[in-house]
Each structure stands twice: as C-alpha cells, then as structure tokens.
Image (cartoon, rainbow, N blue to C red):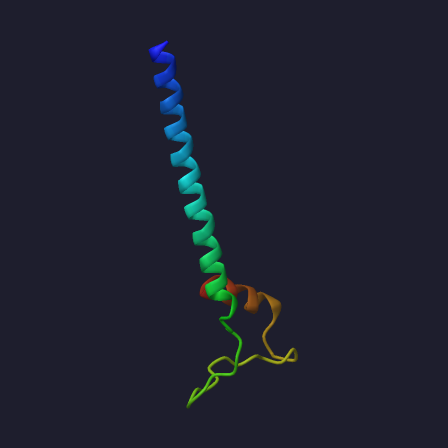
Length: 76
C-alpha cells in the first residue's frame, strides 16, 4: 500500500513539474510574440540612412546562365 501511494505522489510531482514548465514556456512565447508584434521592420529609416541595394531592370545584358552562376557564387 505504501509503495503504491509513493508512486502516485512521484507521478503527481512529475506531472506538476511538466505542467509548470509547459506553462512557463507558453507564456514566454506569448511574451516574445507580444514584444515583437509592435516592431515595424519595414518603416522608413530615420536620419542619414542611404539605400544600399539596387535592383536591375529586366532589360539587363546578363543572361539567365550568368544570373544563375551569380546566385551560386553569392548565395543570394
């Protein structure tokens, strides 16, 4: 009888530990999600920011093979 009771107590301890860790993880994920929800990544930069990326027009002189090789070289 006593070993059965100890097994139930140990199972209850493990269950409570699991539930506690699960709740901690869940509310941690909610906190991180809420923190980055108001983060605007695509706003216009402020100050003396300059544009460093230049899109090429579709009528460029490079062929699709050259673009593919550039893709493999640069890893873009």
